Image (cartoon, rainbow, N blue to C red):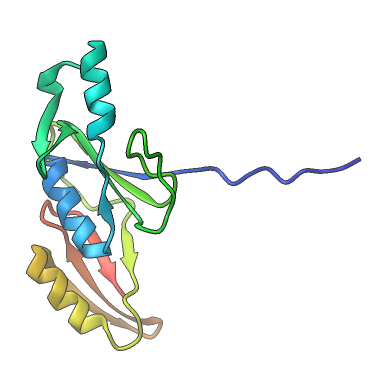
Length: 155
């Protein structure tokens, strides 16, 4: 009897936010990722009448979905017909409510040995803010917040 190992499950991390486009720009710059270009897919959906024009916005001189936009790792594969990444992705979706508590899930960024301070300075220049610096026997890191207040750490 042969056992086949199931293929790993494809996933993306979805982040609720007030402004998906500004969050995508921040995180694309923070991670050196690319904002997904869904213009061709949106054009097709509009032509088919499957998407109302008010569900779109102009973003980087292209059409984008008004309520969601993703960023993807530049070396990962993506569907050229839709612009959708097939690898590491963050998807930002508009929600009506504001963030009210601590994240239950967050990203840890690892810029490399000796690069934490420079990375914190770069991220601050992009619009993040430092919440606190942590020094424990297990290590040191900086807790930061993105422009909408979502916490993340720089190791």
